[in-house]
Length: 564
Ligand SMILES: Cc1cc2nc3c(=O)[nH]c(=O)nc-3n(C[C@H](O)[C@H](O)[C@H](O)COP(=O)(O)OP(=O)(O)OC[C@H]3O[C@@H](n4cnc5c(N)ncnc54)[C@H](O)[C@@H]3O)c2cc1C
Image (cartoon, rainbow, N blue to C red):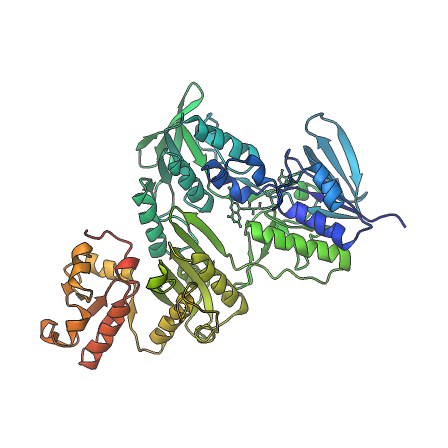
């Protein structure tokens, strides 16, 4: 019997994984990997850090942990895979089970037969038809050559002003890279916030931090036109009519799946324009599988199809494909909870599951808790985290978790992602046995504390109010009694300046006459992180006040201006 022919199209993340594992599982198979780009197995997630000068060795983006560049000869020798770069597949003949490909360098065309075909064609950055988008200086970041060009511009020192169009993950990472390399950076975002996977008030903390680094952020504003002279970019005109002079613009407003090759071959697409696959990652043709940014997958909470272009998912999906080709369709890919994280200068910001807004849009009745607290004991040089947990009000099931801060955001999100995927409730998470020692966490870890806050809220022990709602009330002219229970030196250092009264927690029990004597008046308590704010609420309620609320997250979670 002749060797089984497995052909994989696309050689960056999903493709090489599918090809290499297919060969590992079926040593007798003849595995061919066809890649349009000149490189293989590029670490595209590392491009912003290369551009920003975190490291100088370009090949580090292409190398194994031991420093061997993953090129055609590496794939042949180490993986037993026949890889061909600069090779674009231009059509698929499903009836004769062949693909037609063109060598981009020579123009030569050839046919390759397959028994099983895997589509890993990835996605392409959106380039909307904004006037001037073709000007030299308007770039995207998707391929290695884009990273090369941006690094070259950084190294040249010639670009002084850059505009990032789009405040998503890639936009923010590129913003950091260019800003840290000395450019004057503006970020333009059409929506009212950066990082749409966060709720507004958490995203505003990120925006504040980005602005503190000298970057100008324009939300609720889009690009009307790229302006130029002699074919070169000179500025960006925004929808509000303002003009930002710049020599470089990076458009990072999302990606669209590369599904045309599949569609032209009559393979079904889904509602987002990605290739439709079943739980075994099979397309509508049972001999053709697909993985990575070109497909649509299930959302594990909503059960709906979604487009989730993430590098981790691309690799996991590709593993499933290889297993199913080798062992028959037994391995199911369960889908995504949309976990994502990015570094934002000295902060990290990320989320897993549904935001409050998204959960409400999906029809859930939700309860939320915001928790500002350290990641470790103070004596271990703790750093602050601000998190928001979203749960189903009826069952306590955790639907989502967001976290921002200089501390260990990644660990919090990893814990949360497992809980969200497993359908855990706040009560289960609230009793989770996690490893603890002072260098790593608090005795009750931040994530667990967030579940406890939510438990306190649901049981009625704590009445919380979001900072956004407090601001809304103040802006609307309502006059809640705002009570700051921090110490005077903390107050001197930073205050909300909204007419708040300062009574340190330790003095509160003896200062009750300074509070409104109508016990039904709305009182909003807070401190740095609202732990003392919560104590204050308990004190006031024990003394008969009936309408006391804790401003969740305290002054550290306050996304608006503070007085310093
Ligand atoms: C700057 C940047 C930062 C990122 N950061 C993160 C991050 O921090 N975390 C995260 O999870 N994800 C991140 N991502 C996303 C992640 O890189 C992608 O999800 C992942 O690369 C998808 O892998 P893929 O194999 O599906 O597609 P791709 O990596 O896009 O690879 C597809 C390959 O297919 C080739 N191809 C396309 N059509 C053909 C054809 N017809 N014939 C032959 N070859 C073809 C292309 O040349 C391409 O190399 C980032 C992406 C970028 C660009």
